[in-house]
Length: 147
Image (cartoon, rainbow, N blue to C red; front, top):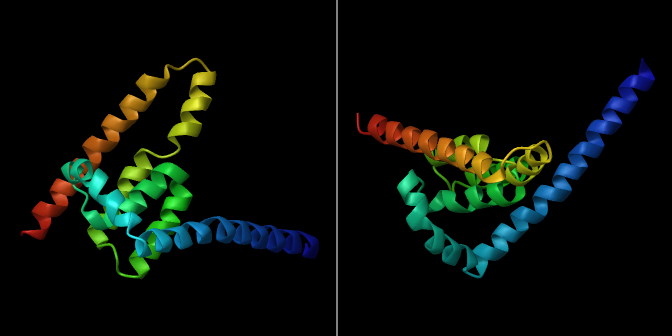
């Protein structure tokens, strides 16, 4: 029993160290992007599209991080931004909804294509569903905040 607990604790510690080693560079990259104005340029470039879905500018970077690096990394960036007060609660919720529906696009698509799926149908359906649900949630949040 003691060996089991030791191995479990060791495994958890290794996993925690791995998550730290992966998420921390992303948070540092975020700060570098913010410092040199790269983040603002990126936000200006994609915000016309993301605004249509219901995202404000403060949610674009965590959204992009989640899309590019996966849901776990995006969640790390999202939590960091939320802790620092850089993203509103409703926007954090919308990012989480979108990423929950539209994450692991590259990995999942490759797995399903290897089993015979048509990649563009798979990605298109997931994107449309994610956009529809996120837009609906954004509409609902705006309506609720005006009540």
